[in-house]
Structures are given as structure tokens and as C-alpha cells.
Image (cartoon, rainbow, N blue to C red; front, side, top):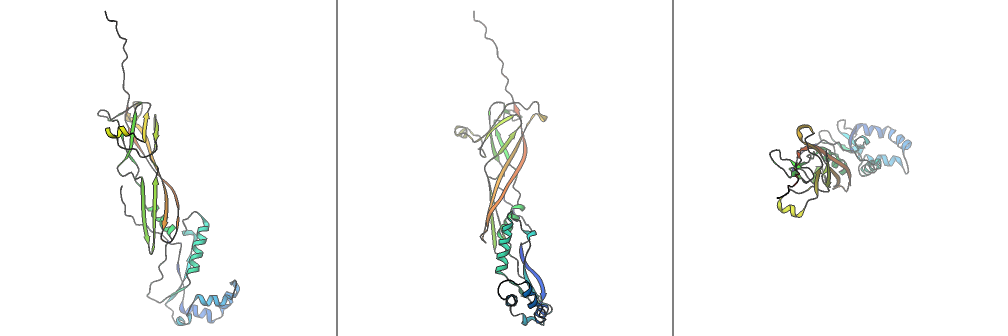
Length: 278
């Protein structure tokens, strides 16, 4: 199993956007425009008091022309989920939990929180799963050829993972992605596949146990380029995630694909008629 460390840029779906200075917000209220706009676009209850409550103690910053109010903002363009309702829930929760925040000059704006699903998708997109490599048996002669009609054992080798785990953290949120594969997907030229897993290396001891992955080649490689038989090798990884903010979900299937070659030979047999003994 190989390990990777990757760095990925991920834009939050919701964040705090710089809005107006303390002086501009104070002037907005004192001019009466805040009350007028609140009543024009307001909903249930007293919209004026709601707007005033969004900017607590705004009078304290009435003379400040350098500090800014930052308002919560969400943008669907940065939503990576597959369900549009997920964006509605995410943005609704963010707006309900956050109001405008005043930031004096020289101080940092509020750090945006990356939600668990967005973080998981960014982490999954940034990781590269190595393509499968395989071993096989029998390997006869200098060419290490297998034989037509025999069970050719196939097994995953090297850095071929049967499961991949990816963990990413941004701010206070950590997302964990687990991708699981069911086995090797083999597609040889001139052969039939019987494979339901990742196989096991052939040994005399394992031969008594058996394997879950074989190819039976029905023709030699003599007619093929390089006298080797191509075998397409794929692995499907089904990925799901959990996150510390409570988000969970399915990220779809990722497939690795490669082509390897195996020389296949044919054993020649000579049939002779027995002679009569005198």
C-alpha cells in the first residue's frame, strides 16, 4: 500500500464577504434608507428591528472609515455536491448561524469553514490511486510464458490497493474518504476470465488452497504483436465519506485502468501409432 501527501486548493461554499465600512453602515441607518429597504424587502415580523439586530452596536463604528462589516455569503458555483437541495440546506444553515461581523482595520476577516462534503470531494479529486499491476503463473522458459488451456493464476502486486483511505482537514472540519474495490477486472485477448477478487500468489502451498482469480487462454500469442497477449486490467473503487461536521455521502466510483502483456505458449504433442510387436 502506497501513501501520498497532497496539497489541494478548495474554495468554501459559504464565507464572509467584505461589505461596507463602519461609517457607511451607520450612515445607511441614520439616513433612513435601512428602514425603508427593510420594509420594502422584509418578511414576517418587524423587518426594521431584524436589520438593526444584524448589525449590533453599529453606532460604535460610526466614525470608522477603515474597518469593515463582513456579511455571510454562499455561492452555488462552488457547491460540488450532486443534490441541489444539499446547497439549500448548507447555505440555510450558514445564514441562520451567522450574521454580519465587524472587523477593525488591520485585523483578519473571519476564516471561512469548508463543509465536510466539499472538503471530501476536494481531497478525493486530489489523490491518485495507482493502476493495478499483476503477477501470473505458470511462467515457462526464458519468455516466462503461460500455457494455452491451463489455469493461469493472476494476482495483484506492488502498490495495488484493495482499499484507499484519504483524510483531509480544513479549519475545524475533518473529512475521511474510504474507497473500496471488489477485485480485479480482467479483459484478455484470446482468453476467458474467472476472477472475483485480487487473487493470491501461486505457491505449492497456495495451490492446494486454490485461488479466486484465473485466466484460461484459448490461443497462443504467436499471432499477436511481440508474441504477447494484451490483458486489460481495471479496478473500480466505490468511495464514501464521513466528516466531523456530520456530513456523510457517496462520491461515486473511480476506475483505474492499464494494459499489461503475458506471453502465451502452446504445448505441442506428437501422436504416433504404436507398432506391432513380433
